[in-house]
Amino acid sequence: MSTLCKICSSETREIHHKTFGIYHVCDYCDFISKDKHDHITEQEQLTIYNSHQNSIDDPIYVEYFNRFLNESVFPFIGNGKKGLDFGSGPSPVLALLMSDTYGYNMDIYDLFYSPQKSYLNKTYDLITSTELVEHLEDPLAYFSLFIKLLNDEGILAIMTNFHQKNDKEFMNWHYIRDRSHISFYNYRTFEVIAEKLYLKILYTDHKKFITFRKAV
Image 1 (cartoon, one colour):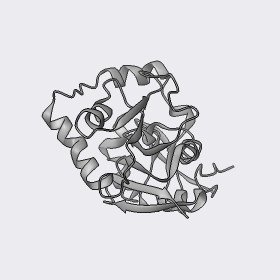
Image 2 (image 1 turned 60 degrees about the vertical axis):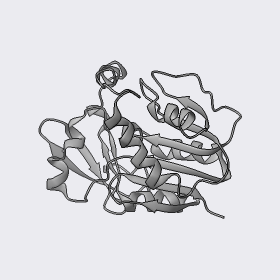
Image 3 (image 1 turned 30 degrees about the horizontal axis):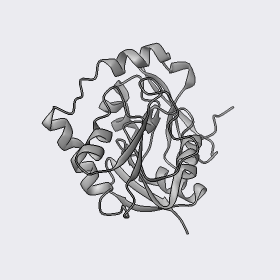
Image 4 (image 1 turned 90 degrees about the horizontal axis):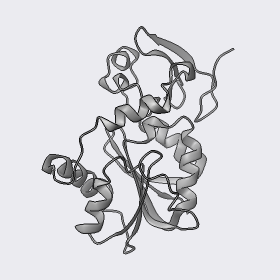
Protein backbone atom coordinates (compact mmCIF):
# COMPACT_ATOMS: atom_id res chain seq x y z
CA MET A 1 0.00 0.00 0.00
CA SER A 2 1.48 3.35 -1.03
CA THR A 3 1.87 6.27 1.35
CA LEU A 4 -0.37 9.27 0.72
CA CYS A 5 1.14 12.72 0.40
CA LYS A 6 0.80 14.81 3.56
CA ILE A 7 0.06 17.92 1.51
CA CYS A 8 -2.34 16.84 -1.26
CA SER A 9 -3.24 13.20 -0.38
CA SER A 10 -2.00 11.89 -3.74
CA GLU A 11 -0.24 8.53 -3.88
CA THR A 12 3.53 8.78 -3.52
CA ARG A 13 6.45 6.73 -4.73
CA GLU A 14 9.53 5.72 -2.74
CA ILE A 15 13.16 6.54 -3.30
CA HIS A 16 15.80 4.90 -1.13
CA HIS A 17 19.00 6.46 0.13
CA LYS A 18 21.55 3.98 1.43
CA THR A 19 22.49 6.24 4.36
CA PHE A 20 19.49 8.39 5.18
CA GLY A 21 16.60 6.04 4.48
CA ILE A 22 13.34 6.11 2.54
CA TYR A 23 11.69 9.22 1.10
CA HIS A 24 8.11 9.47 -0.19
CA VAL A 25 7.88 11.58 -3.34
CA CYS A 26 4.65 13.15 -4.57
CA ASP A 27 4.67 13.79 -8.30
CA TYR A 28 1.59 15.99 -8.10
CA CYS A 29 2.66 18.63 -5.58
CA ASP A 30 6.38 17.76 -5.40
CA PHE A 31 6.35 17.37 -1.62
CA ILE A 32 8.93 14.89 -0.33
CA SER A 33 8.71 13.42 3.15
CA LYS A 34 11.14 11.21 4.98
CA ASP A 35 9.72 7.90 6.13
CA LYS A 36 8.70 8.00 9.79
CA HIS A 37 10.88 4.97 10.58
CA ASP A 38 13.92 7.01 9.55
CA HIS A 39 13.15 10.00 11.79
CA ILE A 40 15.58 10.73 14.59
CA THR A 41 14.54 11.24 18.20
CA GLU A 42 13.84 14.65 19.75
CA GLN A 43 17.02 14.32 21.80
CA GLU A 44 19.02 13.67 18.63
CA GLN A 45 17.37 16.70 17.04
CA LEU A 46 18.30 18.84 20.02
CA THR A 47 21.92 17.70 19.80
CA ILE A 48 22.01 18.92 16.17
CA TYR A 49 20.40 22.25 17.05
CA ASN A 50 22.78 22.80 19.97
CA SER A 51 25.70 22.45 17.58
CA HIS A 52 24.59 25.51 15.60
CA GLN A 53 26.73 28.54 16.42
CA ASN A 54 24.48 31.47 15.54
CA SER A 55 24.72 34.89 17.17
CA ILE A 56 23.51 38.47 16.78
CA ASP A 57 27.23 39.37 17.01
CA ASP A 58 28.03 37.44 13.83
CA PRO A 59 27.79 39.96 10.94
CA ILE A 60 27.54 37.20 8.32
CA TYR A 61 24.59 35.62 10.11
CA VAL A 62 22.90 39.00 10.58
CA GLU A 63 23.33 39.77 6.87
CA TYR A 64 21.80 36.36 6.10
CA PHE A 65 18.61 37.51 7.84
CA ASN A 66 18.75 41.03 6.46
CA ARG A 67 18.67 39.62 2.94
CA PHE A 68 15.62 37.53 3.85
CA LEU A 69 13.89 40.56 5.36
CA ASN A 70 14.74 42.90 2.48
CA GLU A 71 13.48 40.43 -0.14
CA SER A 72 10.62 38.66 1.60
CA VAL A 73 9.24 40.92 4.30
CA PHE A 74 9.74 44.68 3.95
CA PRO A 75 8.35 45.05 0.40
CA PHE A 76 5.05 43.48 1.53
CA ILE A 77 4.53 44.34 5.19
CA GLY A 78 1.97 46.99 6.11
CA ASN A 79 2.18 49.51 8.92
CA GLY A 80 1.64 47.01 11.74
CA LYS A 81 4.61 46.26 13.98
CA LYS A 82 3.48 43.12 15.80
CA GLY A 83 5.39 39.99 14.81
CA LEU A 84 6.00 36.35 15.70
CA ASP A 85 9.17 34.41 14.92
CA PHE A 86 8.04 30.79 14.94
CA GLY A 87 10.94 28.40 15.39
CA SER A 88 13.31 31.02 16.74
CA GLY A 89 16.11 28.59 17.59
CA PRO A 90 18.70 28.68 20.39
CA SER A 91 19.53 32.32 19.68
CA PRO A 92 16.56 34.39 18.43
CA VAL A 93 18.65 36.53 16.08
CA LEU A 94 15.84 37.38 13.67
CA ALA A 95 13.50 38.51 16.46
CA LEU A 96 16.26 40.60 18.04
CA LEU A 97 17.03 42.18 14.69
CA MET A 98 13.37 42.99 14.06
CA SER A 99 12.98 44.44 17.54
CA ASP A 100 16.23 46.34 18.05
CA THR A 101 16.88 47.52 14.50
CA TYR A 102 13.42 47.81 12.95
CA GLY A 103 11.20 48.58 15.95
CA TYR A 104 8.88 45.57 15.82
CA ASN A 105 7.17 44.11 18.87
CA MET A 106 8.23 40.48 18.51
CA ASP A 107 7.07 37.28 20.18
CA ILE A 108 9.08 34.09 19.77
CA TYR A 109 8.27 30.41 19.93
CA ASP A 110 10.52 27.38 19.66
CA LEU A 111 9.73 23.79 20.61
CA PHE A 112 13.03 23.35 22.43
CA TYR A 113 14.30 26.81 23.38
CA SER A 114 11.19 28.93 23.92
CA PRO A 115 8.38 26.39 24.40
CA GLN A 116 5.88 28.73 26.07
CA LYS A 117 3.15 29.36 23.50
CA SER A 118 3.39 33.14 23.56
CA TYR A 119 1.13 33.35 20.50
CA LEU A 120 -2.02 32.02 22.17
CA ASN A 121 -5.03 34.33 21.77
CA LYS A 122 -3.03 36.77 19.65
CA THR A 123 -2.82 37.80 16.01
CA TYR A 124 0.12 39.24 14.12
CA ASP A 125 1.03 41.55 11.27
CA LEU A 126 4.04 39.38 10.48
CA ILE A 127 4.96 35.74 11.05
CA THR A 128 8.45 34.58 10.12
CA SER A 129 9.57 30.97 10.04
CA THR A 130 13.16 30.43 8.95
CA GLU A 131 14.71 27.00 8.55
CA LEU A 132 11.79 25.39 10.36
CA VAL A 133 9.31 23.84 7.92
CA GLU A 134 11.81 21.18 6.82
CA HIS A 135 11.59 19.81 10.39
CA LEU A 136 7.78 19.49 10.47
CA GLU A 137 6.11 16.10 10.33
CA ASP A 138 2.66 17.59 9.63
CA PRO A 139 3.25 20.83 7.71
CA LEU A 140 -0.40 21.58 6.90
CA ALA A 141 -1.28 21.69 10.60
CA TYR A 142 1.35 24.37 11.16
CA PHE A 143 0.38 26.39 8.09
CA SER A 144 -3.23 26.28 9.33
CA LEU A 145 -2.01 27.61 12.69
CA PHE A 146 -0.08 30.40 10.97
CA ILE A 147 -3.22 31.46 9.11
CA LYS A 148 -5.21 31.65 12.34
CA LEU A 149 -2.50 33.84 13.85
CA LEU A 150 -2.29 36.26 10.93
CA ASN A 151 -4.19 39.53 10.76
CA ASP A 152 -6.14 39.93 7.53
CA GLU A 153 -3.40 42.05 5.95
CA GLY A 154 -0.56 40.23 7.70
CA ILE A 155 2.15 38.29 5.91
CA LEU A 156 3.81 34.93 6.44
CA ALA A 157 7.45 34.73 5.32
CA ILE A 158 9.13 31.33 5.07
CA MET A 159 12.74 30.35 4.53
CA THR A 160 13.66 26.79 3.53
CA ASN A 161 15.74 25.33 0.72
CA PHE A 162 13.63 24.34 -2.31
CA HIS A 163 14.40 20.99 -3.95
CA GLN A 164 14.82 20.82 -7.73
CA LYS A 165 12.47 17.93 -8.56
CA ASN A 166 15.25 15.62 -9.65
CA ASP A 167 15.70 12.32 -7.81
CA LYS A 168 19.43 12.06 -8.48
CA GLU A 169 20.08 15.63 -7.34
CA PHE A 170 17.89 15.09 -4.28
CA MET A 171 19.84 12.01 -3.23
CA ASN A 172 23.08 14.00 -3.40
CA TRP A 173 21.63 17.20 -1.91
CA HIS A 174 23.39 18.63 1.15
CA TYR A 175 20.02 19.43 2.72
CA ILE A 176 19.10 15.80 3.38
CA ARG A 177 22.40 15.24 5.21
CA ASP A 178 20.93 16.98 8.21
CA ARG A 179 19.01 14.06 9.72
CA SER A 180 16.54 16.40 11.40
CA HIS A 181 15.22 17.46 7.98
CA ILE A 182 12.16 15.39 7.15
CA SER A 183 9.99 17.54 4.83
CA PHE A 184 11.06 19.08 1.52
CA TYR A 185 9.26 21.56 -0.72
CA ASN A 186 9.52 23.51 -3.92
CA TYR A 187 7.40 26.24 -5.47
CA ARG A 188 4.79 23.77 -6.69
CA THR A 189 4.38 22.42 -3.16
CA PHE A 190 3.75 25.89 -1.80
CA GLU A 191 1.30 26.60 -4.63
CA VAL A 192 -0.77 23.61 -3.53
CA ILE A 193 -0.56 24.62 0.13
CA ALA A 194 -1.76 28.09 -0.85
CA GLU A 195 -4.66 26.64 -2.86
CA LYS A 196 -5.75 24.35 -0.04
CA LEU A 197 -5.53 26.97 2.70
CA TYR A 198 -6.67 30.08 0.79
CA LEU A 199 -3.35 31.87 0.75
CA LYS A 200 -1.92 34.19 -1.89
CA ILE A 201 1.75 33.94 -2.83
CA LEU A 202 3.23 37.44 -2.86
CA TYR A 203 6.84 36.60 -3.61
CA THR A 204 9.35 33.80 -4.05
CA ASP A 205 12.92 33.56 -5.26
CA HIS A 206 12.29 29.88 -6.17
CA LYS A 207 15.32 28.93 -4.08
CA LYS A 208 14.82 29.65 -0.36
CA PHE A 209 12.23 32.39 0.25
CA ILE A 210 8.46 32.55 -0.10
CA THR A 211 5.91 35.05 1.26
CA PHE A 212 2.15 34.63 1.69
CA ARG A 213 -0.90 36.65 2.60
CA LYS A 214 -4.45 35.46 3.21
CA ALA A 215 -6.44 35.39 -0.04
CA VAL A 216 -9.43 37.70 -0.06
